[in-house]
Amino acid sequence: MNWLPAPTDLSLLPDEVHVWRIHLDIAESQLEEFAATLSSDELTRANRFYFPEHRKRFIAGRGSLRSILGGYLGIEAQQVKFDYQPRGKPVLAEGLQHSGLLFNLSHSQNLALCAVNYHRLIGVDLEYLRDISDVEALAKRFFLPQEYDVVRSLPENQKQKTFSRYWTCKEAYLKATGDGISQLEQIEIALTPTEPARLKTLPDWSLLELVPDHNYVAALAVAGCGWQLKCWQY
Image (cartoon, rainbow, N blue to C red; front, side, top):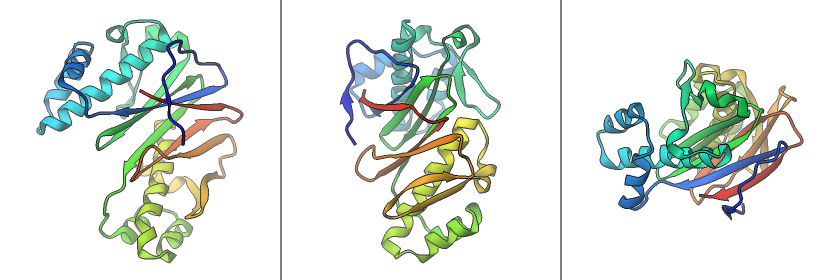
């Protein structure tokens, strides 16, 4: 997957979806600049993290998000205002919703992805590939029987990645709709180790797996079809 340098003249067409790859381990000077753009409630959340690296990555993620959205909206990063849905999903505050800009952010370890478009519900999920104990038991608990059968049938060296692919695909859709993890079993995903994932029984949605970096898996869910994808490196 080709992550291009961000253009100086950033424009988002109605039929485009932009995905930004963001590295969260950044210089202290840039971290301070990002912190200066955050709201008081975001700084309070940042300071609740016990480990400094988690606090820094939260600030980097939120600061980058504000910078990206501000670029599309034509305002300063600190002028971006958020409201929060019942499950905590951030959306643009009422005064900015007239723009039609919709976004979603996901982070794992030192990487984040931000997906942006106009008017289409959108969700992105990113997972760092780590050893998962009892991967079959988790698949049996959270996945549909046919999905569990796929995971169970694979060699040990393919089970963990396939499980994570299922998980990110389901999460991307649930983040787009705002539904919680309790709905994981309601979304049927078809995939194999050699074939890309697709959403079954949801023809009005698009699902695309992304390759953000070595040892990561990610998925993008977008309402509707016929859109063009552009991938930027923040």
